Length: 83
Image (cartoon, rainbow, N blue to C red; front, side):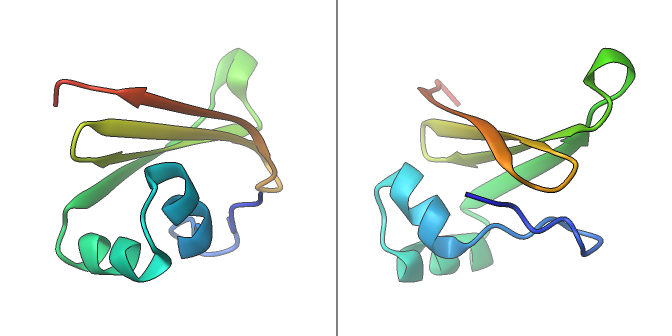
């Protein structure tokens, strides 16, 4: 999996998000437009320089992708939250 970091905002393929949230790609797009899937993008500093974290929330699930400077996903974490 790869995240496109060439734009001002990172781009994740809806198919990739659909897999981690157990949704269809169409449903992911609908939920994002409605603001029901939210996200945060962070750039590593210090010892984490050269990496990025992209976190998505939907319902009670949080998914975090950690990627290198080229957008290659190094780690994916999926947890249930009380949010």
